[in-house]
Amino acid sequence: MSRNKLFLLLWLSGVVVVGWFAFYTHAHSTNCGGNNAAGNQAQSIAMIARWAVIEEPDHPFQFSTASPQRREELEKLARSHWACRARFLVSTLPLTEPADLPRRIIVVCDTPFRNVPKQWFQAPPTHAAAYSDGTSGLISVAEFAALDRSKFVFLDELYPPTSKGGK
Image (cartoon, rainbow, N blue to C red):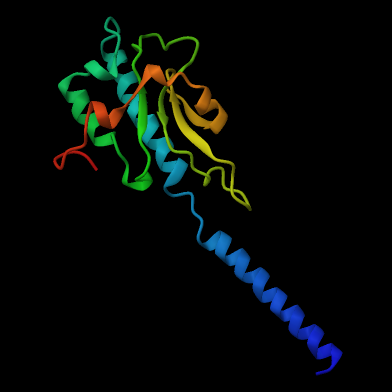
């Protein structure tokens, strides 16, 4: 085999390998599930709490003492089929109106995901969180580790999903 043919064969092999890698890393990655799902779920849980405070501003909201209607809504959100291994921690502290200041985390996903923000290579692991002011975002693994988790409880332990309402 001549040197030119060997070079061409190696070059084509390299192109195939690089092409396969590019296809595999982007065709099999998605923003569905992971932190997208966990973020939406955390924000939905937080909005139930915020709405309860808006409806009854004289009564602080606590996840553990939610009304039957709110319990049913929270039960449905306790787990997510889009982020099936994730669980959500909710604050045990009361939520009041106006929005608690300073802003604090009231819902956080216990599982870090790497799919958001989408990058060429994997993003660093982050946890989805929702705040007392109604906003949501991502926190680092270090920020999650620094949370005082004695002030949180798993939502699915407060309100276990049932076949009737849970996912």
